Picture 1 (cartoon, rainbow, N blue to C red):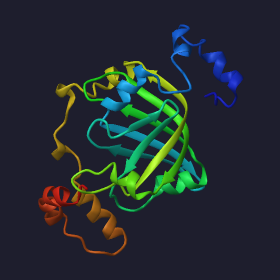
Picture 2: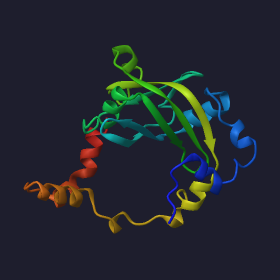
Picture 3: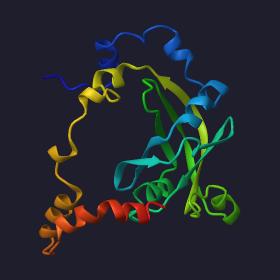
Picture 4: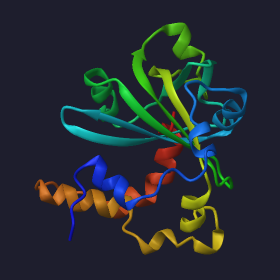
Length: 207
């Protein structure tokens, strides 16, 4: 087994980028074509890196929740969560971030890289209000690279193909997972009640 531990070794086993277009489609700003994808996306994955390691965090809201403020700036509202603040801590330590935008039933994804800062301003957070709840804070990202990814990964995964879906019951429930980890810390947890009440809990606390 060979460990690839240098750029030279890596380039020796992979060919050059396929076609000049794979290089041309990376730009340093959000143009009008990329804006349409970003504003149609209801879901993204935010990658950050801090002193405690790497983190990937999901973000989601109705399409248009990510605001293209300028060609070199996008803003993402931060909503109510579990207050672990993994991404936020990382951004304070190391502001470089990576983002992948997904759109249901669309094979292409949009990748954005840049430097983020956390903004707290009453008017700004209120401008992202949904169901009477403003954003807790806003991530403002200075765009450095934007790139659209072709369909191959989503086509291989059949992510949007309903025939590939599995029943949720085939996997451990949220209550079962919470019970397992509670037991590791010597705490009792009623998984059945948690699962029974989760839909209502979600309805009341999603914003």
